[in-house]
Image 1: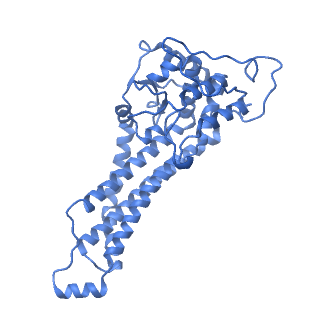
Image 2: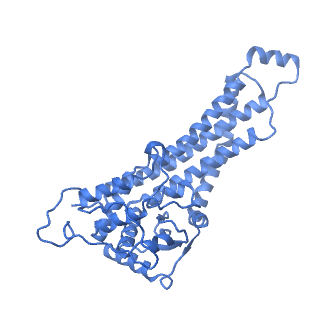
Image 3: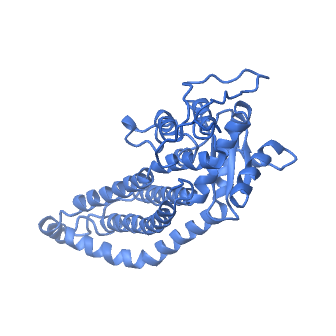
Length: 365
């Protein structure tokens, strides 16, 4: 079965996108309840825990429609303006055919070969070597490449990178990553808002207004500290889950995108060469972690590779060698100024055109 456009992977991504949106609202509601619990402590003082929890539940249902409306508004804003926000961070600008015919010719050839609508093209003036795709629907899809990538890669390598990003668009990976980025933004916003209001403001816990009330609090109270602890735990859990959601997105998508590019270009060696040139040179200085997770390569690895959003370049190259018959040249130096990079096309492999080439088994055969 061809790796490009795997139906099961596309369907799984659609299902994951729905789950991500549901998860967004659940996490927002958790944060709202945590804020309501802290508000009860501030207003009621050191009351019994059961009393504070009941009050927080009542406050939660009052705030429920406002929290829902706020989350929906955030999604609508992200839907409409996420590309502008990403462009402002990365410094990417739209590019026309007149300005860069090389880029347009490469992307159009790939799209025509598969009947895919041509996405918008953008160039970031970063010297790093990287690329990423964004968008939530056919009208919004775009591919951004850095100036460093354009200068360092030859046409075959650049075509392989563009094919990789096109596969992300086709397989629904781009939509899922944008939704995950929106979730991270919403949770960070609500969490920081609650923290600033109740922990950095001049809020003080009420201690009662009479000796009788204080005496009653001593006998029946004592729930404020536990309530605040519960609220803080809920906020931390919501924040951690928003991170886990992003990292839980399967790294398998990068292998599938590499496979899709090879199917489009019939040139595994160009993909391997592009990976080796980009390796260790893809850091976008101005980009946050959410944007780096959408890139062709993310050099910001997690602890012991546990939270890495991309498989290592070595693993991706090994898959191309094993299943696509590619050849690994090892780490590559970038060409000097005025020296065009060229790939030595091997004489064997499944796309070499030789009749005696031994076929290889694997998901791309």
